[in-house]
Length: 535
Image (cartoon, rainbow, N blue to C red; front, side, top):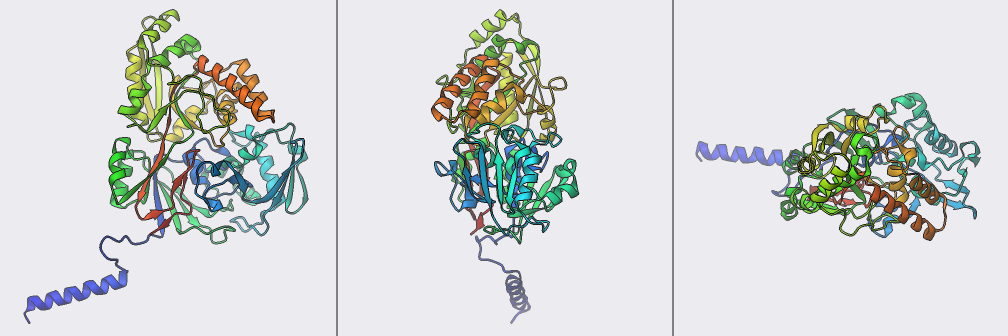
């Protein structure tokens, strides 16, 4: 035997030993990871459930916390989708009853559940959280979800029963509770951390399937599996959310195996991603409106003719086809078809008509147009910065010179949540995905004047007293038919007032390794991957 042959035999023996030692798999078979890494486009601004403004961040928070009730998704053992997803099911509450007058809700609670800090979940913990939802000292941009509850009349007749008394009927209360904003925190953990410190990391505050480990701002958020979770145990030991604002970089990391799931890679690449057998595109329509918010209290934008002109100036269909590559549907209403109360106001949406846009601008006293600051995020919505550039070019065609600015998401949220006297916003890109599938979630949240920042997230500062009246009435009217009529009238008024440039509802998609199974999307634009597995 030659020395060369001997060296080959030794090398093969070492390779076989290493393969056995490291658990090497046949070529083409991926080793099962214990950590699921998900690339997202933005960092969180807060991990407090009550402080949520952003669906992507709320999605991450949902891994750590439970609510009393929830929509019928993966945690219930079913795949999200219509019509199952619209049903509210039990989570930390095992059952509930509602009085005939709709003013009393009685919840029976799950027994034997512990928070991640070792303290007990019980009626007193629920009472603490309901009071916190309503505490004006706590940052809660969606406090209106719960203001029908009378905090002075929360009863705890025994350790596992909670009775909520309402000031007025609230036909959407259960749907509102089935959101991230209705999730339950450990009173002991909140008192230990302090309400103002929750954004820095709610360590051990939840009862959810995962618990907080670390947050490196701008880079990643890491969670570890909760060994004492009361419900079904997830597959992965660790979940890490990597903050990757650039959509192309998210795709590159996915293809390289650095992440197993990527939030919305570049829209132009979606057709090729669908054809790649090593990957899976998980997609579906969502209830998210994408729009250009207009500060209705700013200079030229106070005039409804100017706002209508801007709607005529933008060719939504062309942008959807050329920049979103078909991943959107032109808005025909201020809401989307997923929501109860939806009305198609204008088939085909606002038409592209630059001649009419110039005519209206001239009537409003701006025959030569005007200049305006135009702010957009990067990496939050499908092709957001790219479509903002296209919108700016089309506005320039009618004389409106829009100067684009962008920044990271936490800073953007500070802009969006600033009060009128401090807001830097003139026109701006934003999206709104209703957390619960009712027109109330969008119309009240975006168009009721009592929701201007800092009380809420209606950052277009729109006000129409008749719309306010209709939206308030819709919140307390138990008759679905009457509510539908109220929301129809409200949507028609809002559409005519044009407080936004109404763009499109975007499709929602994530791309995963072909080995990652059980990932789906939900109508309110969340991904369901807590119970994903590796095959």
